[in-house]
Picture 1 (spheres, rainbow, N blue to C red):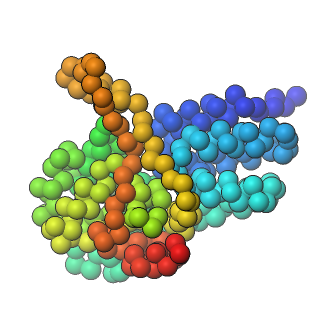
Picture 2 (picture 1 turned 45 degrees about the vertical axis):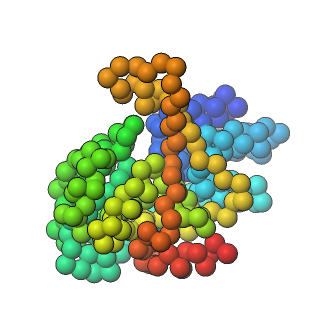
Amino acid sequence: MITKLNTLDAKRVANDIKNFKVQGANQIALYILEFLKQYVTKNGFDSKFFQIINILENARPTAVVLHNCLESIRKNKTLTNINDLISLLNISHKKNIDAKLIIKNKSTIMTYCHSGEAMSLIKELAKQKKISVYACITEPLEQGLRTVKDLKKSKIAVTLIGDNAAGLFMKDTDMVIVGADALRKEGVVNKIGTSLLAFAAHQNKKPFYVVANSWKIDKRKIFEIEERSPTEINKKLTYRIKDTVIRNPAFDITPWKFISYVVMENGVFRPSHVLMKLK
């Protein structure tokens, strides 16, 4: 007998996302779509279905890829649509870009956090030219360590640096490549600290590339930057701070004026191209 999935299973999936067992805008959406595929296969579109997708969407309110996929399902409630969304996300994740469009004679890249799409592009560039990478550790959860592990596995030369050292090493960097959680009129939403990296790149006249896909176009009127538990910061301190307010936003917004190019599934574009899509 097949055991039916229920709201408790949905809460477990949501907690996996909240606890960063699954991370990256595309990977979060794919993880949830796979769960919904199993749910619909076993339960159909029953009375609890929309309650479940609301639970899942609230797990990462900043994630527009997830939001856009769930909106598509709300409008077209079929298993075929869910399967099509999974296929489209897997295709858009790949970045088969000619290195000449980006690297030219440059070979040292700085990156931040751990973005599946940014990693896909960097690995593609490494197939075409010898490169090296500075990976920022990305506090407070040290997600840059995943980037280091990922690049080392692909035999790409990588140096781990502290976030506060990014400005110092920017002069030795040829370009910055980061991912994105959402592309909005205000700018690029990505892991907290991305905007500081963009400011440093701008000051040093280094090109700043954002790797994203069309599912990250975010036209939502109401937008919320997720704030996470203060313990993520406090537990890393030499001693615990008591009776002090600690703010721990997970994302920030980098203004478009600091973005050089956006690498999407169908090419490399100026910010003006993305802003046209946001109208």
